[in-house]
Length: 169
Image (cartoon, rainbow, N blue to C red; front, side, top):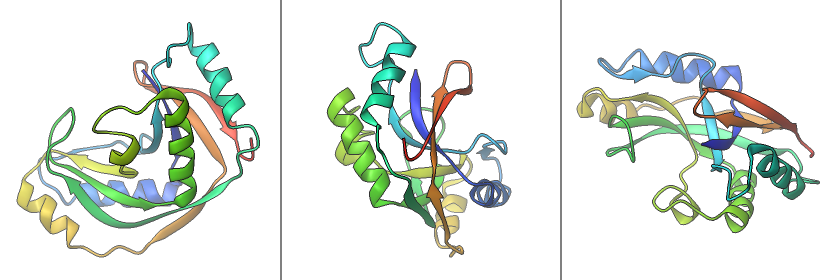
């Protein structure tokens, strides 16, 4: 499985890592592993990763950089997969939504995760006590704003970046 992701700035990764330490028993993301999923891709029916990547690059031709903002904390009480709850940083970005919708039009949307169900976020931690997760949601954080100037293809099976696209593409 591949996905197209926004690499998060170090300030956002540091915030997520620091907050994760406050949730006893939760599984935190190690620093450098924080991402913001734009679209899960698989190979999208293409015969290879390279064919799928080429199609995504073609779709992104002319894609400008766009703004993103982390501005709050929320939870998914029940994770689609993996341990619950999932505590995350909320992301606001009209440009990200536009890009997600364009990719869903080409590759389809995964039920419950994408399309109208898309909830852009940066995971802080998974698991741990629900009451601690709910308390975390009551916290106010200093918003972090940045320009998304690159996108990365992540290989979930190998756990690494397969390639990167600079914006504007």
